[in-house]
Image 1 (spheres, rainbow, N blue to C red):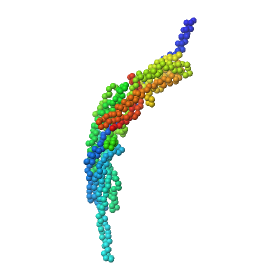
Image 2 (image 1 turned 180 degrees about the horizontal axis):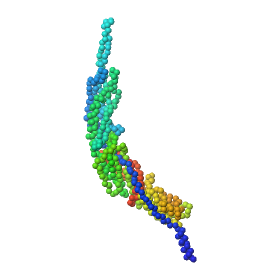
Image 3 (image 1 turned 45 degrees about the horizontal axis):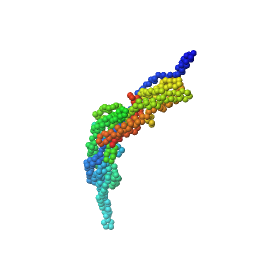
Image 4 (image 1 turned 135 degrees about the horizontal axis):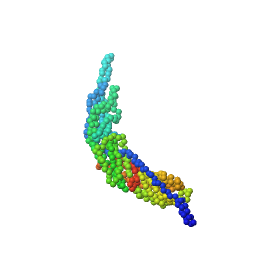
Length: 475
């Protein structure tokens, strides 16, 4: 009788204890490539020394530009005209344009004859008429400024291209009114020296070209920029290399009072590479010239940041293994005995082994690895029971569908990656912050934003695919 009761009791216990063995989730890991990064631009200045240019021009342009006497201007009026330089020629830039100012003095006089009739009385009755011719003149002395606008560019052969256009700026009113005729002597003077402007413009072209031979400079800059830079060295080396697509000139700008510059804007992709040694980069023989509308010195570079899987797993296990939870509305106390973590692609697979008074077995949870930029933490986004586990719980342990256990687990699955993210950003800023082009200048990259596009597993690491954006300056 006792044996029968004992057998019945053991059988009852076995029947009342539920073992959960759901099928492991079938996970498809679709590949989501990173979004195509915007094209980066680096402007490398071709510097023009203002004082050197001004000295050359002042030494080559004559002081006396035009002289003429006895010039007929109508109504019997003649003019004597003298046009000459009245000061040093100087260079300045304004709103992306380069200007040469040539101060000019217009000096001379206009001459005309005035007739006056006088009455002469001879005796008490007779009157005769006498016509007197009086020679008159009026002097003038004015200043105007000839502004020569210079547009700099690059031709298809990679040589500096200079285009000039001259305009006149009058400092004050420059007309005379003689015998009811308005004489604009400044306009006459400018017409007379137009022929002089052609050789002046040609001289400006010649001086700029001889001062700044840019042929071959883009290719030289490209070879310098092609050298891979080490962005990060822990735990894996991450390199970056510039893939120059083309270049184009941008508007003139002032660097300081002594220097202006025509920037050659390098249109480039910036590619990252993971490996112990730097990547092999093909150097093109000739960079094509292609005019673009954008002249912003901006960059965007993909930066993979690697986090140790072991450190991540151990931290989660430390927080959750051997912890217990009481499900509200029941007397069941759930104990998490062991945890196994797996990452497939960007999906987080979480297997926990639980036990309670009349329940034991495994639960599978799925979530997506995500990054919180404010706290710089990794976490499992939308963590929930997988489909097989959810159905099994509905059939055998519906009380576990209460959100208490899930909420507790979600709150503890997080990992601080601020050290890895900050180190990667800092090293990138150092690498891009001092790109030496040659002895005269360097390019400085400043990181403005850091964002995360995706997270996935790669070998023994969690790979955070970050994008750094910023701007380049040159000095």
